[in-house]
Length: 210
Image (cartoon, rainbow, N blue to C red; front, side, top):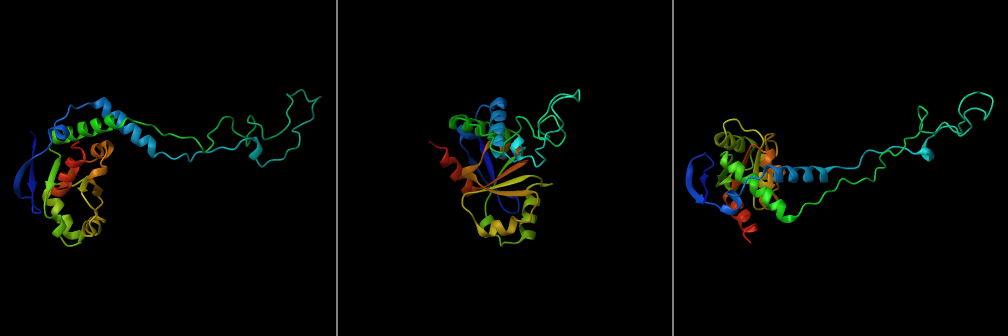
């Protein structure tokens, strides 16, 4: 069964705890993780691109040139797609959807796969005592510099929202605060270090215990 060290706010080892083999010792599946990331990013997309059709172009509706006698092809309006400033044929409407679906079991397996890879790379930390720290950016900055030599892209996982953590870490550009129960594969892979509070780790394991 895999183990993780529980660290104090001064980065001293307090204990070693066993963690779920189902979650932290799963089979690493790069293809499944890739699929989970693509699904997540696709579902974040907004249909902001939109073009105008012929009815929406604000140009004169007079005939371009007379029907016969010019030697040129006949045309009825400047808002045709072939003219500069005209409409767009089959362009994005603003209503297109990029939603993708992934089975819940596959989502879980991809998450466990990502967490196992992080654990093997020694990029998962467990900390105890953060709830006792006053809401000070300087105090939290000192703690995370003690935990990680050069903190970058840290993801702090908590079990319940806590005001002192929200206020104290809000100005730390290298850290994001997130609820452990809603962790996903993209967040794991996009972070350099995952930092669980001890209570958040218990909550997270209980969430996936069934």
